[in-house]
Image 1: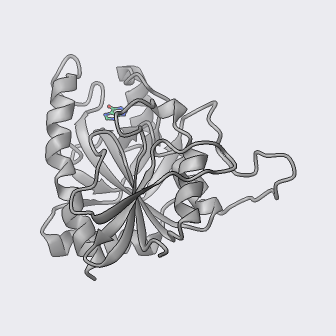
Image 2: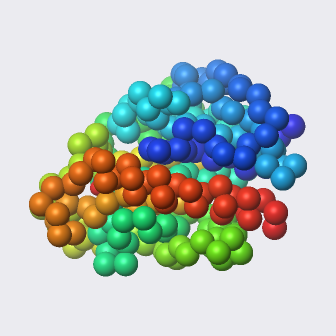
Length: 247
Ligand code: HPA
């Protein structure tokens, strides 16, 4: 059965709560192995696939994720809608820890990643339109689902995608702020662009784990705090998805 929806889980989301009748699918791709098997199952009778972006034991760092294999595999299972769940740091004043946002723009600061399916001899060269990096329809549906589920979310924001795996310096975040970034994360790109190359409807649920460097009162960023905040923010995701699928 073709997937109705695919979810790519980020840091703190390695299994999807509420997924029933699951089968684990190892999908071979022309681009190599996915980060983990795709866990296919049902939510409210709808076929949903879940893929842990960093592997089920968080063994794959952001710059080494095989984004091409992951996106290809979800497409090959019939998914036409993909939601990337990403842990991020907050830059804008209303993007503090535990806030959930549905960003609408991206600036890509990553480097050295394999960013296109065209990057193979003989492949057709595609210049996708990426003016709006996320699917307007899927963003709208996510915002409506969050409202129906009673989950407050921020509508919009510019996601700055950094290379990682280290967090940023204060100067780097000050630059991102000047550039217009509201959030910063390490995994938003090239996933969104690859999804567009395959004509998938793609949107991001950004879970704010911490104030980005220099944006809060703390002198440094505590990993314990990141994980505690993420646990709380991650709990909203199954509620939003259940509401999305029941629409
Ligand atoms: N920077 C980049 N990625 C992140 C952060 C951050 O502060 N927090 C969670 N993911």
